[in-house]
Length: 563
Image 1: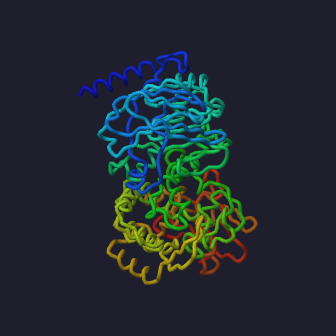
Image 2: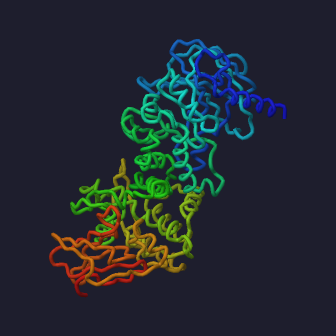
Image 3: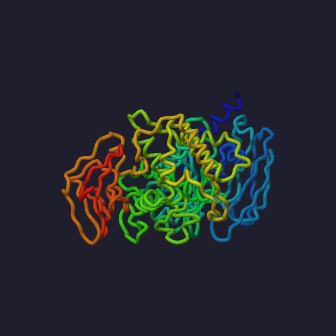
């Protein structure tokens, strides 16, 4: 109880002085004397959740050091735990050095320039109290803490910073961004900026089942600004200087939400059960597409990005149409389908965004279209993640991991999804050396496919036989289970091998199918090449005989031509 009272008094003192100036002129700067909390070791969190490492830069001191600085750290009761001062430079010549700390006075000669952090990682993190540390020496740079500071303090920190990196503490994520970028793109709205990042991580944690299963770690995620590239590594997420016009701007961050969720998603990929060969750039994007759908619903990359549709037609929704025409119509293997970024050599590892499409359809169907319907399962991915976290996958090959995903999916939703999996190319025999940064074998046999079909037959089929046609553009038709409405030969404009269908005449359509006799030759998702989804551009090359409008339940309605 005594420790608790002392801790509370100390914290209150810190909070009360947070608005004071953050330079060395203030001997009682809150950054000079702080209580530092214990965090779970990164490896323990990563192993428990089957993910990559979270933040190794917890507990920022707000103190900047130069090489040669003589400093004194007075450390309170460590409760037998090992603490250390870490000095790290995020700019220029990278430098990192750790200085072990002991109870009492610690006199240190700093070997490298950089910001200071208190390493306090222990398996006993839930049992130990925060440790009081006083730092004399170095220069106060400060940091922004969402829980304690407002935009007023944000502006003060940017003005008074002595280092070009500012630590930003959110509820679920910490950032280390350049002061120059923040001054340029976010001079006044620091709280709003970090709050947006927190929303992204909160969505991922919910999707991963960390909220549902009470597994959310105390550890934060971490992102830093780097000279070039967007990537995830052992530190966390990294974002280039020239992307800060989006990623550090409250007004423009919606334009970068996919990139943010993508890189954080890499860290949160559950491996290997939800990250097998050729899915490294796929299963992280389930976070991206869902985050964008929730936070920026007016623009969806798969449905509205203008790219090559696989046949050298640059149209809005090109990626999804590439999936429909090469995966569904032509029957290419999942993970081996062409698209905008993989038009050649895709046979051993296709376009990453095209590979995402069937996973996106599952999320749309059970989490969106399922709302208010008996098949609704909004947390299916969370349940999938929990199953994978508790599965011993030692000795499993990539084919077994993919089969496990499909089997788990059927068990979770209590539906036989094998028709869907066959149609999208997941449940097909394959024996290929797949390309995914490094190469690895993916083998699924005919016998294994038959076994899964037999296993799933214990469940009923889903309400829709055309789940593989679902998009964000048509999800309401699935949710409301409404039939197609249309006027034969109405609202059609033909031009140079295409037909533009007006939705004043044709409503509640999932896709338009183009036939040459009995052969299905092309599919166009509803809203193709239409910014407001008021029309659909349908391929109708010479020799085509008819166009069909497909409803959510698989019913076909003749649009043009003869059957």
